[in-house]
Amino acid sequence: MQTRTKPPIRTITGLSSGPRSALFFLESIIEPLVIVFVMWGLFLWFENRIPLAVFLTSILLFSITFPSGAKLRHDAWRMSRNVIFQWLVLAGLVLMLAEVTGVLRMFDPQLLWLWGVGTPLLQIAALLVLKKCSPAILEWQGPMKNAVVVGLNEQGLALANSLLNDTYNRANVLGFFEDRSAERAPADHGYAVLGKLADLAGFCKTHPIHTIYIALPMSSHPRILSLLDNLKDTTASIYFVPDIYVTDLIQGRVSDINGIPVVSVCESPFTGLDGALKRSADLLFSSLILLLISPLMLGIAIAVKLSSPGPIIFKQRRYGLDGQEILVYKFRSMTVTEDGNTVTQATKHDQRITPLGAFLRKTSLDELPQFINVLQGRMSVVGPRPHAVSHNEEYRKLIKGYMVRHKVKPGITGWAQVNGFRGETNTLDKMEQRVHYDLEYLRNWSPRLDMLIVAKTIWLTLVGQDSAY
Image 1 (cartoon, rainbow, N blue to C red):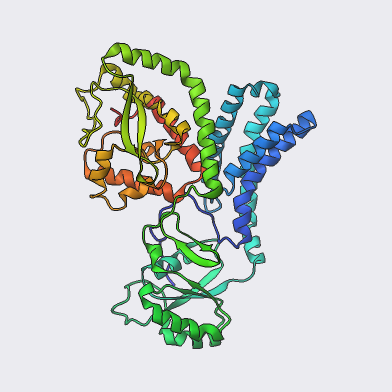
Image 2 (image 1 turned 45 degrees about the vertical axis):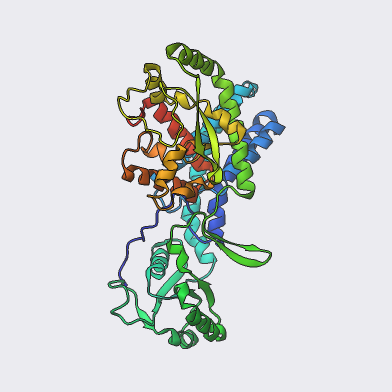
């Protein structure tokens, strides 16, 4: 069978194997455990105890980093680079918080150096050992399982290609069962067509088939029921791959309501414990930032008042969580305070922008009052940037899925902004790209992604962005 390329499914994070795999569990927990055990081990070595603050910090770090992202698929260099970058962001935030609270001075500098350097090195070593042992772990889980796919279509081929190209997969895809003629099926797929749907039950009796993936469209409901009835006389495990999974799902997952299975098609990532973690991080980070920058904000406020007539704080109606209107604060950077049915976006060399305002916008200092919005619960530190109400009403008619970005609170910074889509969106294509990145954030949110966005925002603020005006 010829080798096929991986299907064009783009994600930010993921794990190397299925959720019932021992390798899945080990890969997801090994980095968080190293963080905890290194911290505990160093304090036991240096102080012969684990202070309560250190214990609570280690539990918090574990909850933020578990489950860790997939790295076993990467080569040693890329794996090491990802570990080191993520650790620099995480350790930097922890040390900054410890410095502000005065806790940092309580600990031996040698201990801190060993913690900062030793943790990522041991994480890399642990991952390399796990990668080396992964073939044995997979072998321990049992021999390869023979699988067939019912339905030679887009979702069936995507599933088969994914299984084929997954190094850590234990399924051997023998081929497809399909009722359509060869002329109607996708061309040049490279898989064997083993028969019609009616032949599947008999094929399972004469061949060792462990898993059957049914990838028929939901419109084929009668055929699916008939097929399932025929397969009751086999021992194969059966999975249904509904065609909704080739659509643009947001936090798609299977759950249940009082025992009744339901499939999530569009959901906020911030439900349950994840929602509490997100809100706690927002409160902690925004409180810390406001404490640090309060003298700077006072200086900016005085400068805005003295530089041009008008209010210090510009308040504008924007859409927040679930499309509800909220008031968003900014330091005034223009001679006008537009908030009507028509709002003109700022452009390069815009005459409405004051000289001080140009500097504030270039450095993002005009956004600082939005940390107050975060404390109020109107915004989050990281999330899709809020647009003026008039812009929302315009673009929701032009861009499919535009309003889905309001499934979460708007953010001071976001995935779109750190990928170059900050400032003026003077074409529909630019706004579509911004919305694409916003939805990508919703699909793949994790605490690590939030930390990455914050780190990239700080870097881009220091070096400047051409699109900021």
